[in-house]
Structure formats: C-alpha cells, structure tokens
Length: 221
Image (cartoon, rainbow, N blue to C red):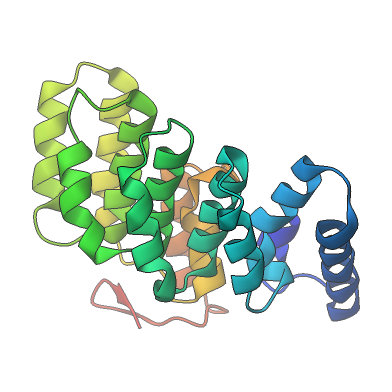
C-alpha cells in the first residue's frame, strides 16, 4: 500500500510519518535529480501543509515535466483556489500537459470545467485526453454529464473506452465520502485503483461500523 494511501487513512505512526515527510522535503530541496524532486512534488499534499510556493516555482519553470508534476500536485491539494490555474492549461495542446490539466480538474471537481470538457469529448480529441475527460466528468458530475457520456459511448467503437464510460456512469450513481485525503485515494486514477475497486471500497467504508460517515437514503453524511 503506498505511503500516501496509508497517510490518508491515518495508518502510520505519527513519528514515522513525520520522519518520512521530513526526508521527502529534504529530497525536494536538495536532491540533484529533477526526477526525484518532481516525484516528491506530486505528493506534496501529504508532505507540505501549504505547497503554494513549490507549485508556483514548478509552473514558473515553464518546462513540460515540471508543469505536469505541478498540475498533479494542484489536483491533490483539493484546494479550489487553484481552479482558474487548472483551466488556463486547458488551452495547452501539449500531449503531456493537457491530459494532466484535465485530470487535475477532475481531482478538484472544477464545476466550471464541464463545458470545455464536453467540447473535448469527441473522436477528434487525442485518445489519452479523452480518457482523462471521461474520468474527470465522472468526478465533477452535474447536469448533462451522464447524457453526454452515454452519447459518446454510442459513437465510439473502442471497447476500453466504452467500459470506462460504463464504470464512470456507475460511479456517478454513488455518493463519495467527504474526507478529502480519503476521497483522493479512492478516486485518483494515478494511484492504480480501478473504478470498481474505489466504488466498493467507498461503500464498504461508508457502511462500516467504524466508519466516520453515516449512510442515509443512499448518501453519506
């Protein structure tokens, strides 16, 4: 189980967690490898309380992979102050940056991103971007989302894409937990959890006697 997943579930001893966080911060500030520093940045939501400075510095570099890492970090902060920043990158056609911007919008649940995401949901859009669009819409939800996803499922002949749409529509039928870090672990595709897995996990935890959420009329409160 990844360190950040354990952290979100409060499964780490506080002393051990602090030591790991300090080691990651040290690596970000002093390691000579950009790859190492970018990987730390992607998980700064558990290592830095308010990672604005680190994210701004990464974006200011105007380098593709640093921008990609910064956008993922932004999404994982679950902070809506970054919404406008994420939307700005929707106009970036770079095949690495655009999918990550869309993914960040899904993580943040940027409601105002729905219209541009609807426009991206067509066969002319890059396949990787479409995958992220479908996932992001499943996280944002709202009017028309299921209708748009069903329409696209009818015009694509890609079986994997159709399955992703079906899983996304299924996920939209459930209410996710409201604890930010746990919600992130259950819904972030980059953590390697499938839609079916995250749905079952969410339902299990919300109906568990040890769960901090109460299940009422199909909604977590």
